[in-house]
Length: 251
Image (spheres, rainbow, N blue to C red):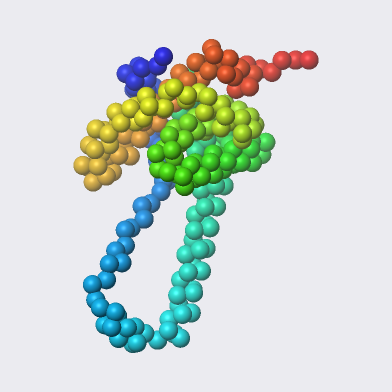
């Protein structure tokens, strides 16, 4: 059974010689995987209906309607471009980033791992598996917030699994991640909470300091994956051949 302190100590040891490479990868990962909050708009009008109607009478809807249509069209195009960017560039880079951190933990901190998923034989399988994971997470969040959070932890190992075997299959990647995290989700949640102090300190530095904490978090998550992978192999949830840890048998 893994321990938080051991994972963090291992991550610190790895970052002693790879920190700035890890910082660059974390910066790219944050750029392609980050999200923006939605502002809370208050529609609680205090004016009376009659005053609202009188104000609306001054609006030239014939002129305003085409402008609103253009604005709506522009917003839709931006949303589709953002989704395309996230799916076709962000997902492969996320898997490549996890490949870097996993290999760094195994004493191979090569920045070339960042482009790992862009190989023609891997690209579409990686995009498909990550898209399937995102779709499942979306459905769970539609149900309720808490189930969505739980399932996000259940599927959290998918990028690392794809970094081991990008052709494992989208259903198998999600299934294996679910199996690997079973019984560990709450402990992983506590592991995330243990970084709040560092994140708070980063926020005090005008928010920029958080960027310097991300390599530590990502390196620790890579150590977590290695620990869960070892346990999965011991429990026969997967094999070295499936995760491409050993050469395939010759027939």
